[in-house]
View 1 (cartoon, rainbow, N blue to C red):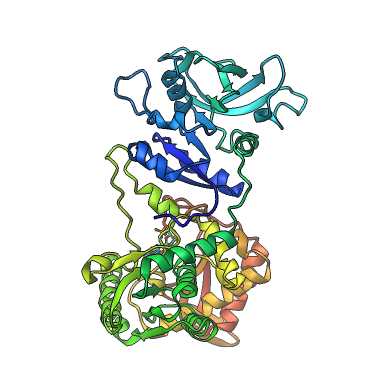
View 2 (tube, rainbow, N blue to C red):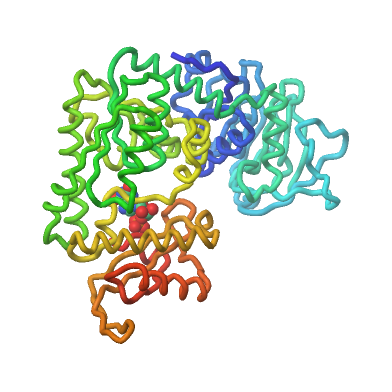
Length: 523
Ligand code: XMP
């Protein structure tokens, strides 16, 4: 079933490491596209999808190998523009009557320069070769090369290792390039993609307003008059999913907010106020701090902490969700990168969905079907949708916060006293960062309270209080990270504020470990 009203571009994935970036660039150009592994793209699929244009991605295979991946002939018969990239170019040439050779001598990896062919420049090259050097930097990554063009094709650009760097059959609007226009190392690559979609007649109708309307229609069609449960964590993804679903089905949605007592200062109140009072969403606030802190009493091993919290979370969620009569669906904030990463390229067409961190295993256990309205979005698009739905910027731009909460920022035993100190210290640190205008430059910042008391002197008295560590890192995806280079003035001012304003801390350290070898959290 499709409720799509805008034009769609189909990206057939042959397994390149950077296929996702094609989608990224096209979305930036307000063009709706979907990536599908070549195994899934049958003639029937194409007829149903009805793309306005097709892109054949790069891939690791060699078209010279018998049985190498191909699109069905129906792709070429659609009469719509096609762009082949790298392996996609070679596939087109081979399929359409040209020739491709495996070759060690012509392999190109990394930066290369393309110069235009003699003669008139077709529109696909608009905006290219204009900067005076007469050439464009591109990123190549190919071992095989095209050795003879398919009938109807001509050369529009060449590089030292790729005489057929840019080729086109202008009559059929088939384009094929040996390099990767989707990566940043092809600085003008997005212009080429823009020319391609312009040629295909896309109007840039992929806006968040359109997405919102479409997603609402889809949710209504999927859910009907049934009930949906959504686990809220206070994070951006589950919050945006909840607000969107509520807009679609109103009070058929109930949110369950498991408050494990390990949240930051004011966080639980903020979630409850925003969802219950501002958005009027039926919300069960499961205040289970006693239960969680009781079970964590005396636990200091990091893995035991995580397992205890994870298991309790599922128990508690299940208990509260069980009170909601007739629920058939569980909402999750799964994003597009999770969906793509879980497509097994070589393992056939089956798609495994990564389980949401906090509710993993729940849908099966509770016999619930999934509603995943963010499955087509990248993280920054989720933020844009959140803004479109009226969620405040301060909420949408927040640093990530781990599911186990403050427990993993409190090495050693967790006590209420330590948690209270940690909450206050964290609030001061974040306030400092905001005051200095640094919040958006930092991926994540927090305080960890150390299981060490140190001697200090305040006024004329001796203190014997906790030491804490400040942590602030830059990162793109949390997989690798670097410590943030605060000025000494900033660190000194922050240490003074912490010691003056937070009773229980008398020493402040700054953690300058990158990841790897460290991790972002302390446990
Ligand atoms: P690490 O500490 O592994 O963290 O370098 C990488 C990123 O993941 C977050 N994190 C978690 N998020 N549940 C979550 O939802 C968890 O158990 C968890 N552990 C770490 C961490 O805050 C950082 O952003």
